[in-house]
Amino acid sequence: MSRAGTGASRKPARQPLTPMIGSLLRLPHEAVVARMLAALHGNGFDVSVTELGVFLYPGPEGRRPIDLARQCNMTRQAMNYVLAGLERRGYIERRAGTSAAARVVRMTDKGWEIIVRIRSCIAVIEQEWASHLGTQRFKALRETLHDLSVWLGKLP
Image (cartoon, rainbow, N blue to C red):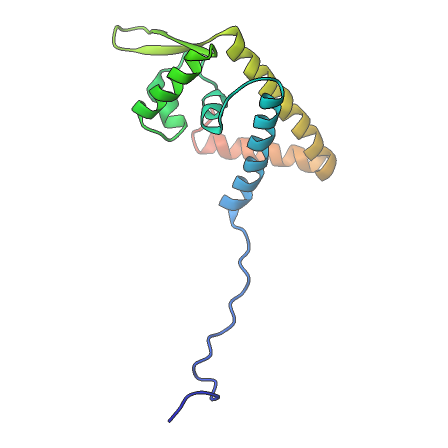
């Protein structure tokens, strides 16, 4: 006996998926990264999205390559490759750290200029978002994200 037409083989309609918190955090982050890269490229800085990760808060100044690798979710070897490219183009220098085995990253004037451009770009984005959401809602969003970052151990 055929089941066609009996309705027994029909699957229930699926509810449309709504974005969960991961997506709601990722999507604005993607927009921010795209704006930062556009601002940097528009001002003559030749950095890739991978290299940009090195300059994101808290930045590379005085940090060890292994710590930057963790921040950027890559191996130490991959990070050393990224740092070598940034060093070759004059954004950073790698110097001896507190022990003979430890090396730390120091930003050059050109590297510090990237930080200035990033922070300037973010200030514009924050103004735009505050205008769109309203000052109170934006302030609440910022405070909430800060509190979560502290609670997660990502900020002091």
